[in-house]
Amino acid sequence: MHHVVVMTLTGALGLMAVFFVDLADMYFLSLLGEAEVAGAIGFAGAVVFINLSIGIGIAITSSALVSRSLGAGHQDRAKQYAASTLLFSFLFSLVVAVCLWLGTSSILKLLGAEGAALEKAEAYLRIVIPSFPVLCIGLCLSGILRGIGDAKRAMYVTLAGALTNAILDPILIFGLAMGVEGAAAASAIARCVMVLVGFYGAAHAHRFLTPPSFALLKKNLSDILAISAPAMATQLATPVGNAYVTYAIAPFGDSAVSALAVVTRIVPVAFGVVFSLSGAIGPIIGQNFGAGRPDRVQSSFNNALLFAAAYVLVTSVILYLARAPIAAAFNASAEATVLIAFFCTWIGPTWLFAGFQYVANASFNNLGKPTYSTVFNWGKSVLGLVPLVTLGTWLGAAKGGLAGMAAANVLFGILATLAALSLMKRSARQSV
Image (cartoon, rainbow, N blue to C red; front, side):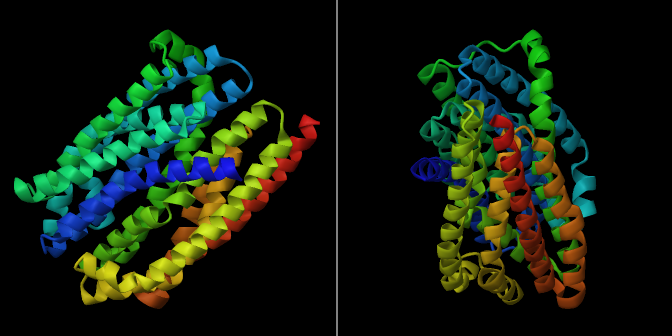
């Protein structure tokens, strides 16, 4: 449990720092007092989340390959995987960035953005999207450090980016009067800082990086794709699901979209510890699986579930007590305030089951069944969110949409946990 808690808390600080950046952007931009700005960030956030999800998927790959190789005693192989995943992350993210850049306007219109909100969202993304490859490299370096077991330096990577962004936000948004473009520029610069800190930790502190090459990437590509393809597909299910929620709530007005934008930025900060369980428990499971210790794999899984339950209970109480100050901090309208309070009261506690699914996904990724993660995440987005959110908005407008999202978390969190327990039992029998 001590190992799980240390890895999770250090991972949480780093991951929460990434999402705190978005929350800080939302807060500073809300001070401008323009409703369309909040709506713009809500629409742009769905696209940014796609970038972040791909980066996290690649980080999961680097962490899993490095940790399993080190657990099996193959240090040189682990270094080769680290170099190859870095090159892969740059090339793949570059292609995705170009595609998103070309389709920015169409994507935003598809989500329901229009008028001033569309213009400001597009201006924001035109600056942020080119920095996507930089973000992916930074997250990949963080994953490599986590795979090594250096949770502290992995945390420093994302923490440095968050601090940089928090400092630059007010300077660029207000000091230079850049508004939405200033928030985007701050995020882009912060991502460069992440890469510098991550490279120092992996290359200098651990001397773990070997020069990347296309020949080495070709050699390791099948192993990388075996994890990265399902891992990225798994991660992309979440922003796709969130995009549908945005689309379903958009007809209820900019206030509803702005409330959703606040909620989707509160969740990863409030429940960042739960989100980080996947990245924290993964290397522990990977190293022990590589060392042939199914007993420690099962113990780590159980401890992660217990830790998630305790954390969500405490956080849900805090959210409930802070529901009014949260709405006031973001200058929420009357309608948006009602939705934020509804979320903090009833929806927040259901993130326990999302936490269970994150732990289950880590088990799937590190026990050789990454496609299971893909199936459950997309199952939640397509078979869970789409019908339940649609039904919810039909029965209860924007509140009903949030309730539908919660129901999907509960259902698929339980199913994924049961599947993970079954997989660990099979793995233990095969080990024996």
